[in-house]
Length: 458
Image (cartoon, rainbow, N blue to C red):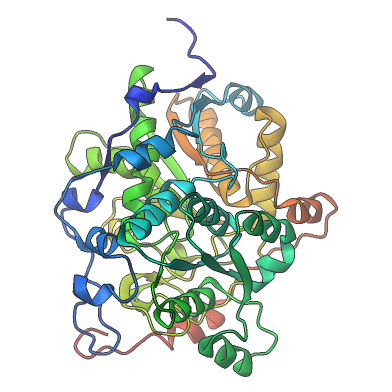
């Protein structure tokens, strides 16, 4: 058998022409979103004040298995897709493992991550609807950068609320977002009512994605012609990100391979949901039984230590409630947490799959994650984003188990992007000043105690 190439690219003709909607094959669907005023299931029309109409439809569509990708988006994808599937030969050798390790590399665009896959789709639908502009939040900055690119392409004004501690840790994210003509504001801020309220309660807060979402939503609903868009968590985002998994599966089929284990980092769920989509479909339909492993930070462990409950998607409690694994919408991750993956909850789709036993989850302290990142960089010559490094750590541990057991399993993980905007974090790790933080049970219980009380449900 010929040696498998290091990198495999699909042709443009082999790129997906449709997104895959995982909900169409789930045995049990996630519980519906609830209107925050009535606690009744939200309707598609009730999402229109916040979201573009076609995105609201995608959010609520549980039945359509495949959704056509508009030709204009397909053409945009061709500027940076298909992304390569790479065999990690050098990492395998360094680990002395019989496992075959593959990774899907999504860092080959200016945003440095997979986020552009959904950003261009959301900007396209906004332009099609004739909107005047968009608002959004961003944590580590990948989503804000990607959406700034997409909005610039369609000449749409954009306001980005970036989690304050990340804004301060990563000043060059501001520069690149401004390069694409977007406005960027550290959150919480004095520019919104909810931001002012949060600052009044805690002037020294370092912010959270929940805070930033609240500000972005308020800005959207109070500005004529504007809508809000989100880079993770939502059903529509996982739909758009399915191109990652669809490309991966086609490439692996060309190599006569199929993953025994699929590993992805997990914050809100966009990358993980996109990567696992077609493999989870096989699992749901009984065609194959890969292990699906979500890897999250120990400082924000929504799957491994959260509650499966209805919660607000934002700290200001203005968004619909979602049934998900959550740490509580008022949970603020430690400011020393260096990467993204800071959201208090997990995608309702992934939460339901995890709750029903189709997925596993593990968490790691960030020093162990950066140790894996440095090892990977030395072997594979790509400096990974801290978020991606969680998946790397998970894949390395699985490969070591293969070494110990002698099993030659096939491992696929998602390398979501590059770490070149995260050099302060790498410096902290390399000079020994990086610290780990794991919330105590008591701290988590304080956040759980504030989960919304919903009559007849929780």
